Length: 329
Image 1 (cartoon, rainbow, N blue to C red):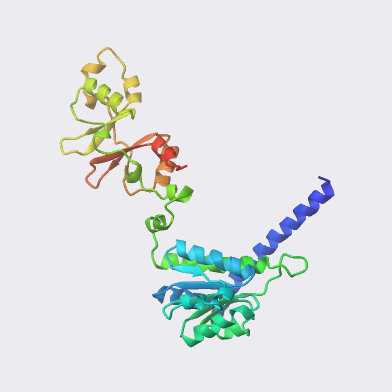
Image 2: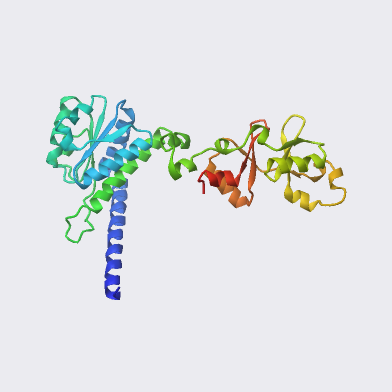
C-alpha cells in the first residue's frame, strides 16, 4: 500500500477513535456537573429496578441495532428484556407489552415517527417510558417518564450524517444502566453463569467443585502410613500427589513426586509419610471460580490443588488438565 494512503487510513481511524473518546468524556463531564442528567440516570435505574414486568426496548435504524444490544445486555445480567421493532409493534406486536412492563425508546433526534404508536400505547395503558435522546424538547423526551438527554456530540462521519458517535453514546448509556442495575441487585458471578452456561464465558464461570475429582478418586492417606503405601496410592490415582490427613480428617500435608525425588534413599520405603510430606499445603474451596483457580495455579507454578471444606477436610482434587479440558485459560 502506498505510504500516503496508509497514513490517510490511519489518520481517519485515529480521528474516529478520538471523536468517540471525546464523546464519552463529554458525557462523564456533563454527568458530574448537571444535576438534571445525573438525576435522570438515577431515576431510570430506580424505575427499572422497581418494575415487576419486562423491559421492552425499541428504536429505528442504527438506534434499533443499539437497542437490540441493550436488550441483550439487560437480559444477560438479570433483567428480563427484549427488543420490539416499532414497525412490527404497529402491526400487532404492541399486544406483547403489558401494563407491568417498561419501555426504553432510543431516538437521537427524539422525533422518530415510527415510535409514535408505541408512545401512544404507553400513555394509554400507563406503561412507563425511559427515552435516550439528545433533544430535551422533542416529542419523545417530553412524553417520557424519564428522559435521559445526552450531550450533542459530533459524528465521526466527516459529513456529520452517518450515526457513529451518537450510536456509540447510546450504547454506552445502555451498558451503564445495565451494570448499575446488576450492582444494585447484587447480581453475582453464579447468577451470571445461569445466563451464560455455554462457550468461553461459561467455562470461566465454572466452579472448582464442578470440575474436581471426588470420592475414591482423591488420593489420601492417614498420618503414620508407610511410604510404600504412599507410592502405590500416588501411582494408582495418577495425580502425582497424595494428601495426608489427621485422625480427625483434616488435610495436614501433601506428598508429591518431587518430595519422593528429594528424599530418595535406600530406606525411603521404610519411612512414614510424616517424615517426607510437605506441611501447610495450598488448598482451595469448592466455590472458587475455575478462572481464579487457573490464575492461582499459574502464579504459584503448581498443577494440582486439593479442595477442602470448612473443617479443613479434603473434598476433592483438581488438576490443571481438568481446567484446560473445560476450556478455562
